[in-house]
Amino acid sequence: MINYSIYIASTKPGTKKANITETKAYGAAQVHESVSFDDFCDHISDHNSPFSSGTIKGILTDAVRCLREELLKGNSVEFGDLGRFRIELSTTGAVTTDDFTVQNIKAVNPRWTPGRRFRSLRQDATFQLVPSRKAKADAIEVVKNSETIHGLE
Image (cartoon, rainbow, N blue to C red; front, side, top):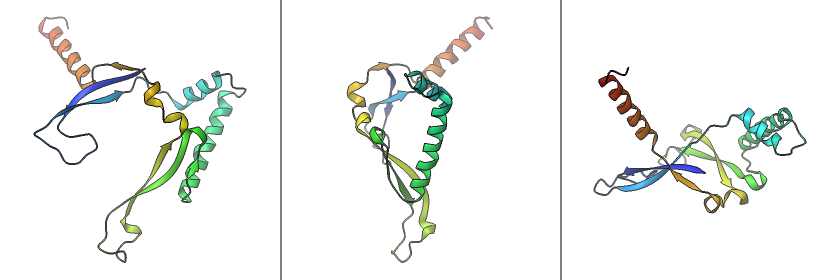
């Protein structure tokens, strides 16, 4: 189940230009739990795998290293149902093509294009509305203040 909260914003997330006269409600996924790499390897191993968690960890560690090497060669990597990985450059503009140099390249970012098994997440997902992290923090603050006022501290 995917937890989500709702917030009000004066512009669509990811856009630079705000339309102050109009606000809309948007949804934001709330992370339920962060699964460590070791726990993820244990999880894979527990799914009737003939391999130990340590073997899986080694294979995945090597896969990440090799994926990085291929991306730095300028290659894209097809990773089965997981999808395709490639690089994308973040650059600053130059007046002319002659003025553009390597110095204009500010970042090399990995990009992932979902494979077949990840394209249907929306249709397979279930959702639960939960308070935002800010709303939870505000509620905790109210409770703390109430305890202090009523001498419960």
